[in-house]
Image 1 (tube, each protein chain N blue to C red):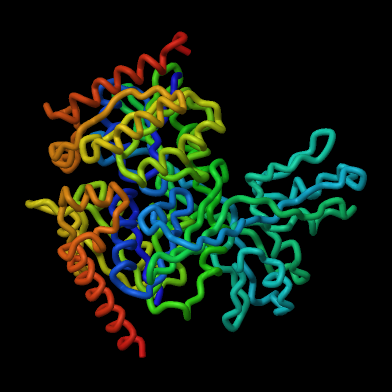
Image 2 (cartoon, helix red, strand yellow):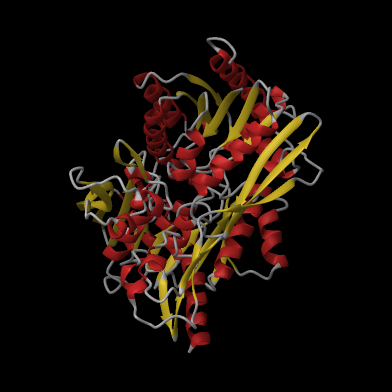
Amino acid sequence: MRIAVLSGKGGTGKTLLAVNLAAVAKNATYIDCDVEEPNGHLFFKPEGVQEEIVTVRVPQVENERCNGCRKCVEFCNFNALAYAKELIVFEEICHSCGGCIMTCPEKALTEKERAIGIVQKGTAGPVRVLTGMLNPGEPSGVPVIKKLLAEENPEASKEIFLDSPPGSACIVMESIKDADYCILVAEPTIFGVHNLNMVYELVRLLKKPFGVVLNKCLAGENPAEKFCLERKIKILGRIPFDQELGRLNSNARIAAAESEKYAALFVDILEAVRGEVRHETVADS
Amino acid sequence: MKQLLILSGKGGTGKTTIASAFIKLAEARAYADCDVDAPNLHLITGWNTEPEKKDYYGLPKAEIDPEKCTACDLCRQNCRFEAILVEGEYQADPFACEGCGVCEFVCPAGAVTMVPAVAGELMLYTGGEKVFSTAQLKMGSGTSGKLVTEVKKQMKEAAAGVQLAIIDGSPGIGCPVIASLSGVDMVLVVAEPSVSGISDLQRIIDTAAKSGIKTAVCINKFDTNMEKAEEIERFCQDRRLPFIGKIPFDTDAVKAVNNGQTIVDLDCASGRAVKEVYERTMELLFAGGAG
């Protein structure tokens, strides 16, 4: 069972929720797909970490063979190749499609591996912790996420929590495309609602079952709650605005492991998620 | 035109809240929202007029003509993005397709065409001698870096001769951030005092350093974790980055935002603090003469 935690806006509490759910779920796997700014490992502090380098294929040219025909330059839709006296490869913007190699009539192009990030696997008590990290300066984390999700063994644990990057672009799509259930985290501001609406449309587009967790709830009107009620969206739980919780979280402590009060809060949300997932499974069969 | 870009690495540290306050304080005549993935600046800058809208085309997407397709499977075997699906007939998945054109190249039957595809919408607000450029990327699209470049280009063209431009950036360190860095004169990073915030700050500083652009740091909600706020100040000293102020946590800020106002529209603690950060930013930005 893969449960993705996402939000259009950044800083709404995706990592807070994903980390604490994995911590209370027992024998769960936590996967940090926010490869640009991964934070979950700071909370879990996993042990026995194994690291693997993530590479992508990029072309390299053998200048003696290149006759300057520019067929590869014309073919490349990403403008990753240019010809000025000799062929120049802009490795950072290459999408690794392999088209230039196919188009070269002189067989002057071959591929080499280029490192763009790492994947780390470790454990924190009963929780398996997988983290992807994109190297600074690299534009696309998608290959790191692909590697990360391929590393995971679905049999190894009952529940897998995917901590998604913010936004709704390709990198989010990659993170959630195989998810069985999506949890959308929203904060009670008009920014929060605007961005909740985007991920709401994204999960509907992908036909994923989903529910919402309202975070940083203050007394008084909550525009995110109103949004959910108007659309009859399942509210899985509410996390109050709470200075103690904020302090624990800002010190990268797992709140559910620190106090029974917070453990109970996240167990309730987890049970609500499990209930929804069961409901979905029944509805599908 | 001097261009100031506001970034954060971590999401939700207050980029848009601070950008909107800066726009107000500077009475900025040119500004842009480069968070094309999750734009919010339009919600708080008080435009009542409709923007001029333009479709943004990313890379083309493959389309397979079932009449011509002979099911030879070459397109599927050569696609590195797993974008060719076989569900009865061969078809290209528009979300997975990155527009490289390999399938079109290898197809012996001429069944594949690369079709232009709308990947987002550019919006330009103009009026009262002001220009606001923004965009919305289409759900699940790639090429957000290219759209960011378009947003900035649109702003510059419409605001020729304007002295100052304020640009709200996106979270993370990937393609939209890298695209937003090109051509700007200074970066202001809004940091959050937490273990996660510090980790993300280091990564955005490393990313910005590759561009060689002058970068300053401020802390938002500094009083939510004083220890971590001090750690950020020390980090800035070690890295020789100008540290230009801290803004307190303020429930009035949430109220202002929910009323579509900036934090300098109210008399509140965060609004007063952001004024100081603004003044220091302008000193740094215009140091060495207006350009």
